[in-house]
Amino acid sequence: MNQEDRKLYNKNYSENNKLNILAKASQKVECIFCKRNVSSYNILKHYTLPICLRKAKLLKALNERNN
Image (cartoon, rainbow, N blue to C red; front, side, top):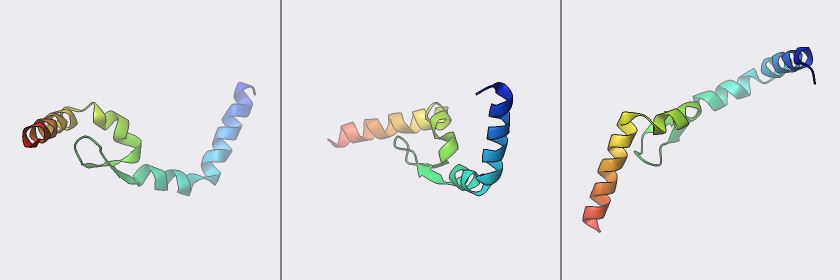
């Protein structure tokens, strides 16, 4: 598939599936490390943020202390 065909395909796909794409983008997912609700499209970026790393470290220390 050449570049022009790919552009046309992507344009048609996004127009036809706009509602599905927006629904998936706004869906909230719980972070497995810090238990926060984050947009599903931003979850990978969230894992690297200081707020998630700090909370995950704290929860891990609390779990170790309790066990």
